[in-house]
Amino acid sequence: DPKSPIAVDPFQTVAKEMKFLTENIRQLLGSGHPTLDTVAKYYTQSEGKYVRPMLVLLMSRATALTPKRCRQNNIQKAESMDQPISPSDILSDENPSAPGYSPLTSIANDAAYGREDSEILPSQRRLAEITELIHTASLLHDDVIDHSQARRSAPSANIAFGNKMAVLAGDFLLGRASVALARLRDPEVTELLATVIANLVEGEFMQLKNTARDEQNPLWTEDTVTYYLQKTYLKSASLISKSCRAAALLGQSKPEVVEAAYAYGKNLGLAFQLVDDMLDYTVSGEELGKPAGADLELGLATAPLLFAWKDNKDLGALVGRKFSKKGDVQKARELVAQSSGLEQTRALAQEYVSKAIEAISAFPESDAKNGLIEMCTKVMKRRK
Ligand code: FPP
Ligand code: MG
Ligand code: MG
Image (cartoon, rainbow, N blue to C red; front, side, top):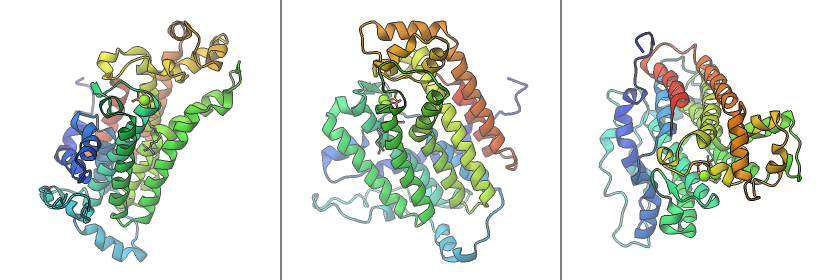
């Protein structure tokens, strides 16, 4: 579009950092147990979208140009921030179960953490890796809970290795993410990302046990959408928003910049999941790289259905029994298709995306800021 003011590919802005991301993550996941090593690294083999680390890197770069907070009691911390964090620092322990094995010996990418020509701090790059680790851990667990068959166009980990190993691998990722987080030596950032892990579970629980409508024939109320949005925040937007916030904090940004980063992430995160829930209805499984139409099959009423339900109260009974009766899923799909549920979902996502862009409007102009804006456009346009 020649009229578009944004010609920047958000990936390009942080391409150099992204290049090292997967390899660094694989190093964080090294285990002396060969099977654990394989299962833990399984989802790093297939190309993910890397939305979360990309956002952290773009936010780090975009906020590098914003005012810094005064560093009163922070001198020691500020100094340690300037030290490149070598990947080898992160795993200074040997695995006793594997004599002779050391994940440290294979670390080759120290150059990736040099500071020379980048205003992204080593701690911010590490944060990008931590966000992807937490996200991948949640996918490992999610695929067990959802009985998934495929992820990223390959058999999901629960299928490839079984539920037990998939769960343990997820736990292992969380453990290594926690170590990496602790090594950032920033209590506020640690608290944020630890809260994210708890939020993911809370969101998943809200989805599992819908206290707002667990009766047989639930009524549609405004609370129905509120509950869904709260669940969506916890399940999806918490990680994105709190990691954007953490990126600004690590960069010593002023409180108003930190809030702006958080607001951007929260609104983009909500839009991201709304679009995800829409794609489950509109895109084929082949294109998605995972089965389409999975939500109804899992008994889940997401935004398109909730909006359809508002206009067609017949859907209440189906929601109440979680689409479990023969023909329910097909019936629900038809009623959603006949309704404006998908359009309303898209419109709400667009509202959130606009709020995300508005949140960072005061940031100084930069490629990274344009990248953050372009991410919003990408979220709205994505097909997988
Ligand atoms: C994908 O959603 C899953 C999530 C966004 C989070 C799942 C969270 C947990 C399983 C809680 C436990 C996790 C941790 C890290 C403690 P989806 O099933 O709607 O998407 P999908 O279609 O990609 O599977
Ligand atoms: Mg799932
Ligand atoms: Mg799920």
